[in-house]
Image 1 (tube, rainbow, N blue to C red):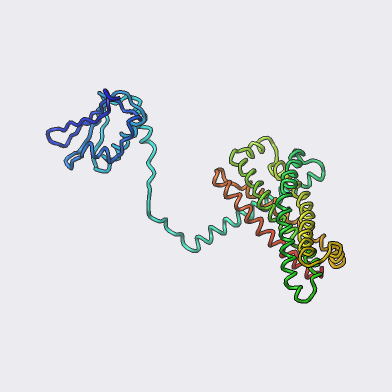
Image 2: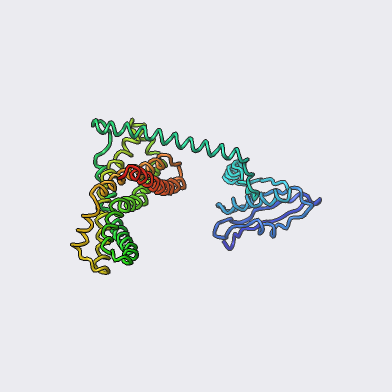
Length: 379
């Protein structure tokens, strides 16, 4: 490069309004890129300039650095209201410049977009809410038909998918469910012991833990864990398929996306969440037993006897019924947001986040409604 270094040679007409810029030497990336400010310093444009002609007769080897320099020169002349002409440039340079000019530069604006009127914003949000509601109803209809075809043995899905989803939702969640449930049982026992000890009724800690875990906390904590773990995975998996147009391919082959993708996940969750709830209840009871035996001097035999005498089996049945409802909520939230996902990586992340948030909120709402209903019924 030393013997054929790039440079800009200027020749100015007599009236000082016409300027010719001669491109000389090799223009390679190894020499770096010229910025607009560097071009300004080298050319030192005058107010009398009216046009600049670029001549490439003495141009050597070139690459994209020449293209970048010419684009910066074009920006500089546009800024100074100077006409720019290109002469005797290689055909490849001219073609690439025309291609670059055919795509308009993005206009960067610092002005804030005007806020829409209040009622218009309400209308837009209402329309979006109705659109989501319509999509949810459509999903429920397709899911109901898919379950009906499953009961008749006509559903088209892969049984292997059900097994894989069961393995992921079940054994894959044992550790986190065991840890959280054990700690929840310990917390319930601690909280109950602090109050009951004042009345000499520490034995009722067993009743508190059994009732709390069996009726409420076992199913709810397991469902929240599954919403954050499995529900998010469902939304991400189906959303990624939406981005890659795999769902469109399924429809092209005559397969129902709900039947082929959602039904195996629903089946796996309906089987595994109640089983995990039973496991969670057992771990919570174990946590309460540890606190009772180590801090309250209540033997394991007395703890189990007190729990079995005061907590009826229907309380545990209520927890299992809730777990089934929670399973439906988790799968619906994950699959609906996955199927309704946009076709970008950002949309997949947004769908995953919304699936987790909506499923957790729905779990708490469903639990509250069921609790109020059972209280009214005297159960």
